[in-house]
Image 1 (cartoon, rainbow, N blue to C red):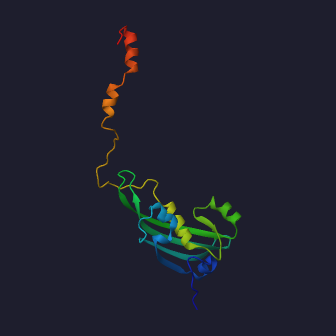
Image 2: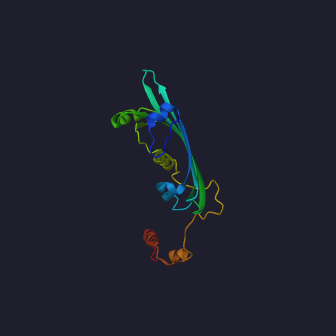
Image 3: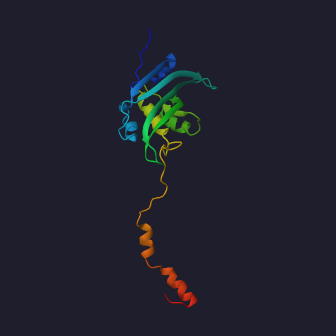
Length: 182
């Protein structure tokens, strides 16, 4: 008899003990916070993910519960250089080790290379996928090479004329130094 696992209500311990794998493709519209980063665009894009459960015995003989996550999506963002649309491909490959209590997770997380989470019988895997993709977002989304010429200077057409018409206070000071009055 095989156990059916649900991504929104995952019994992590049973999932790992079974060495099970879950795969999914969900619409971006199911991930509110990711969709917010896209300014509501791309609702029909697919978020692909896969998670494998595993148990491993450590050096002290304790059985450790692990989840191995792979996720990816192409998000429609705004290039911060040319302000045009840019599709950013995000890929996440992460390992998570689970422990019994929040205090233990907090203590071990600082010293571990992997992320340490609290074991749960009702774990929301899709929330974890969304969290990891959000953390993979670039700080400044931009094209490698912008498709349009980027204007690097901002200036009004009348700026130079306005500058010429204004009096120059340091010119008067220079005149005092030389004994000239303007």
